[in-house]
Image 1: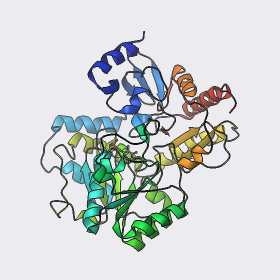
Image 2: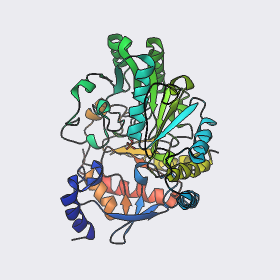
Image 3: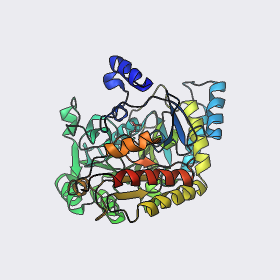
Image 4: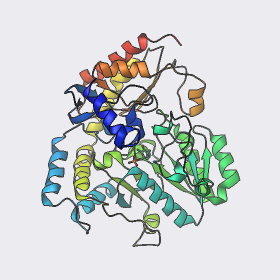
Length: 425
Ligand SMILES: *Cc1c(COP(=O)(O)O)cnc(C)c1O
């Protein structure tokens, strides 16, 4: 029995499923989750002292890898000065100015503690701004675990027996309208039926919580146009894509300006942070400037603000995105002539789906049409070889600036070796 087995047995006694977020429990891949004690650079270390090349990157935040010196110094500096104040302070101001000066559609920003909270708040602003109740979301997009968004979502629910959570407030859910990714007709039908009641459409512009499902720019443009025509706000949930697929996120990548945007993950440099922002006319509705209430005891925590700024400062000139793109291109090349798997990538987000690469996968229907080989053997082959991928077929992989070309190649080769030994589908 490994140390992780013993710790997991204890953990199940004191926490639901032994974890504090579902995917960590390895339910989708079987086996005992490895208990990690820390990370350095491109590696994580488990309780038995074993190192793993880390392509989880804490589910996205660690775009600079573990222990980045400037982020570390910023966080420690904040701790030395006082790690919680509950007052106005200059650190969130520095981060807010840094962002608003570089992202034109973010004219005003409010910091919260998680992506879930950012989404919840942005939806409230949209309802406040329009006086409407309904929210349009997309099948397979995950927006955190607020009730109205836990329908047809993804992330930990992607492989749950029941697609949506128990315990949701049904009255709240009746306000959620669901459309299909990569399908203009479904968008048009949703707006034709509910258009005058829709406060906002919220989408992951790079859907990355039910596999990676890159959308066509024309599809996103059609969504933006329908929002405009029907007086609904367009919310880009960039919690995973923000500062990851480029400094300006997917909105910058596609050249489409949302009315509101949500951030998390990278924006806190690995500390608990979320943010929502957007056009001034909407953000000025937020309390105390306006009537939409939203608050937080620990919001804009100085440690997180300083770590987030130190992270974004290293990303702002774009050179690290170029470096990540060239790492990504090594993966494209490695998987280019693969017959057993479909490889998809947007910047430093990547995903492979264990079915032949006949066409891009952009929706759940595309996935259902092409059943995949089991992911668990591939995952465990890599884990045994000291390479850590997210423990689910539906979670994406993350490259970081701490990864070397050789490490990325090693991962690709391990995936190729593991898939070669799969039964032919
Ligand atoms: C991770 C994620 C969230 C939820 O963020 P948390 O910090 O886990 O609450 C919301 N939306 C998207 C697109 C995400 O990737």
